[in-house]
Image (cartoon, rainbow, N blue to C red; front, side):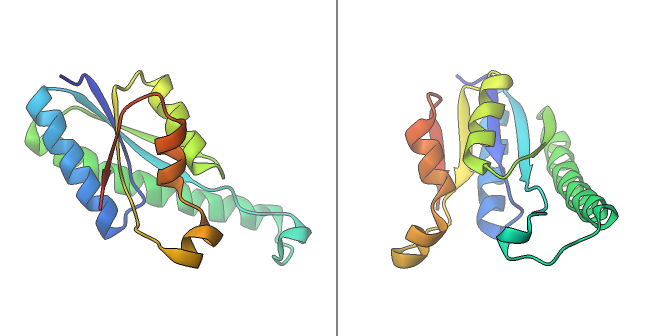
Length: 147
């Protein structure tokens, strides 16, 4: 059935549901699970509305974000180990979340992407956009969306 499943997570409760589903699918199909966390880059431009931040502080903040991502993915790996599922944790630094998900799925030769939909509606969806919608419309790999 599936050989490599990519699950994108942000650590939210709905995202945890996607991880549980992806782990179950991977266990059923004896697939490898690629657990992906996309970490944003710290905005350093004065024009983005932020205060100027020292380069050392930027590195420290980005390291904190990366460390938190690794800790989250280590938890998923531990869950996979308990279920007999091979989990490969992947942290990607990018401000373009959907593109990073699609790119990682291609790079790791995944045949399924599993992710959560946060179910934003109305003006919030228009303003915030939908990473899930972007992945759905631009991926050539099948996408399983959980709500």
